[in-house]
Image 1: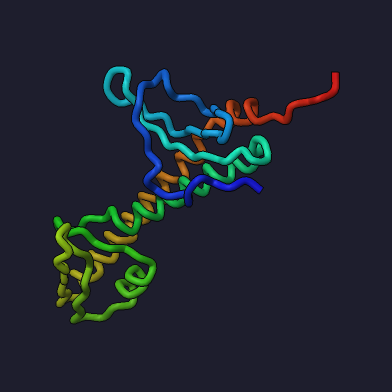
Image 2: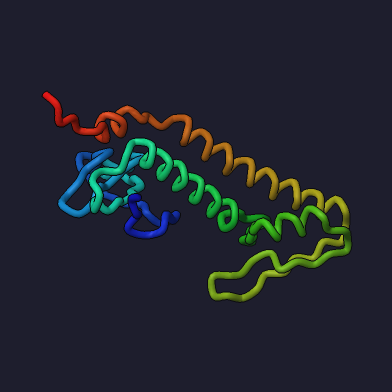
Length: 172
């Protein structure tokens, strides 16, 4: 069983030179998996990185593929929950909030989020149309995030990972 050096999270973005990007690299203690190369300005790029301890050898291609997909899913989930802005206000779209918003009747007041300093943001809905527009915007945001995640997974070129992680044959 391979263990990630840390829990897969949405904060594993790295920046560096495009030339530094290697889908699979390793040192004595770990295998580093890089994916999602996004060139920025000039020679600079961003990518995501997952590290495996190498205590039992290299991870398999299937383990790496599952870890990358899980990482993309975690980033999408984090974006759904914390990336939505409605009428200039950040909205916390946890699963519980999504359900509460969808089942609300007017009049309704919700704590929809917090300012950067922790000040709560409340929103009062007094008409069905206002609440319906808000809920539809929430659903559209979620769908946009899910679609982006699906597109990212569908566009993955798994070839470099499969080639680099092939078992080493000891027979000649």
